[in-house]
Length: 72
Image (tube, rainbow, N blue to C red):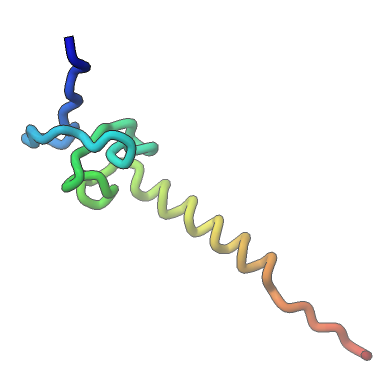
């Protein structure tokens, strides 16, 4: 028997879920190519994703900040 096709987790969508790119790490859903982005499937983890990205960017910017050496 062939492996079972995973259906898109978006409400009223009957398309097959994209294999690797359709898995959402924030809500654990499986989505087709039309609904794979967090905004497209109205992910409940969208705010957490934005906060995490903001914190990563802020950390990276602080690492790259130019240090002023006075008296040289």
